[in-house]
Every structure is written in structure tokens, then in C-alpha cells.
Length: 356
Ligand code: TXA
Ligand code: MG
Image (cartoon, rainbow, N blue to C red; front, side):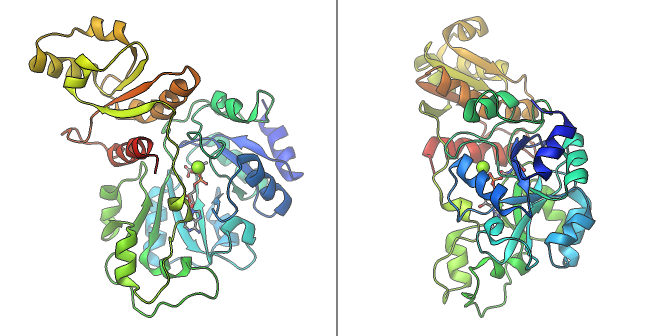
């Protein structure tokens, strides 16, 4: 474990350090140090065509990385930074190709974590993908980083991540075009459908963003429709990689399953235990909270969406380490309860179910 001074020294001298943010831990290197950045890709076993997010602590640092912002981008930044929102912006030429995977855009975010902000003030901008091996869930506490990179890996400890899900990644439509590989911009049509496109849902939800314009999730078929003359591209390279899925089978938990399927080799993540138990009783006649607790490894969140988000990846990791055969997750898709985290949580669970 490192203190902040040691972390600064290591990063400034070209090292790689795992750093805390409010979303997940990141594997950080100086944005200007090619060797350190390559080390990040190697350590993570990350394909080099999947670009990194640059983390900054001030708008001054942003101006080193990004070309001038549009008004829309600026107002979104003013509202949500520091916070769990990454914007795809037009990059300055001097940003290394290794950071952006050769794209003309760069992903940037200002994390809302005091230790991380303090670090960034002292080091300058840092690249930081999630601090997990490609193929494992993003780390939400230092132990997760240690599981993937070993017990003596240099980590700046900032406690458990308060959100536990990766940041929302968006682009404002004006930048949609410039995500093509350099010199392959073949688009002719003026973008018209929406102002903000979400590539990856996170704690800054579609609804929160809709104050600033029309918001859509990225869809490959929409992109094709908009730009029929282009060759197929995926504007956010991360979308094409297989997503993490635990070894155990992940399933939504209906009340009926609760009675039939849950066994001692199941780990069960519930947003609201009482609600599930009540529903189960209505369907089949009987299961008590106590029976439920005894029949499986029960992780429950007392109705707190924040807790649910914080514990999701930890539950997946526990399932892998302890060889559970099934992960059941309360089916929150039809829930009338509202939370800005809901879409992001459903997205991560569906990815873990489908492995895509
Ligand atoms: O919450 C987070 O965003 C965490 C913490 C550490 O900040 N970081 C994180 O990084 O999740 P990573 O590398 O695991 O995910 C970055 C995502 C990838 O899907 C990548 O493809 C996308 O952002 N991305 C990066 N640069 C891009 C660009 N120029 N255009 C489109 N997508 C980009
Ligand atoms: Mg990641």
C-alpha cells in the first residue's frame, strides 16, 4: 500500500499505480509517459485498440488534452464534474496515440474522490482504465486489485468505491464523427437525431442528462442508418469486446425461482429481501426470511440502490473465488422504484448474463 507522496513519486518517475475513484479503482499512468501507458496495457492484458480514459482535476488540465469545448459539453461538465461521467472530446494532437488508440477523440473525466483529486493535482493528467485484468469485474476495493495483480501491487488506498460501477460514457453528437480512425472520415451527413449519445450507462443517467438535450443510447444500427456510406465502425471500441461474466450462471431471480432453484451453491443478491420474500409467499405459500438466509449465501441491500451498485461486482468476484454455481439477482427490471443507478445496474447484470 502506498501513501499519497509515494504514489506521486512513482507516477512521476514512470511507474504504474492503482488509484481510487468514486466509481471503480483505476490503473494509472502519466498521460505523457508512453512506456508507462504501454505497461498499463500489458498488465491488464488489454487490446491496444481499446483506448483509455484520461483523468483530470481541473479545467486547466483539460485544456492540455482536449480542443475547445462546445457550449453543450461545457454545460454538461459544469453540472456533473467532478463526477462519474466521461466525455468523448476532440483530442489535442499532442495526446499520445497509445492513449486514444489512434482515434481523433479522447475520453476524459474528473473523478469525484478527494484523494484522487489531490493526487491528480500533483501529478497532472493520468490515464486510468479500470484496475482489473481484462475478463474480471472492475475492482471496487483494494482487495479486488490485489486479487488480480498480487498482494504487493502498489495501490493508493481510498477505501471502497462509493458507486461501484464504471462511469457513464457519452459523446455530444458533434463529436460522433470524429471517433473514426484518422483519415478514414467518410461521413457526409450532418448529425441530427440527438445531442447526447450514451455509449456506456453509469450513475449519471439518461434522465439526468436529458436536461441538456435529447439523449439516446448508442446503437450500431442507428449509426449505420445515419452514415450509410461509412464502413461499419464502433465509435466506442470497448463495446466490441466480450464483457466479463462470472463462471457461475447469472440469472434474474423471479419469486418462483426463489423456492425452486436457490441452493447452498447459490449466491443471491437482493435489493430488498422483504419484498422478495413477500412476493414468494404470495406465489407459492411459504418461504421465510430465515429459510432464505439458511439456503444460500445471501447478500442484501435493504432497499438501497447505492448499496446494490456497490456490491454487484464484489458478489461476482465472491462467486468466482468461492466456486458458487449460480448467481441470482433480484429482478429489478420491472420494479417501480426509481433510481438514477437503475439502468446502469441492469446493463451490467445483463452483460454478465449474456457475456456480451
Ligand atoms: O469509471 C470509470 O470510467 C473507470 C475509472 C477508473 O475512472 N475507468 C474505466 O475505464 O472504466 P475503462 O478503460 O475500463 O473503460 C473505458 C471505456 C472503454 O469502453 C473504452 O472503449 C471507452 O471508454 N473509450 C475510451 N476512449 C474512447 C474514445 N476516444 N472514443 C470512444 N470510446 C472510448
Ligand atoms: Mg474496464
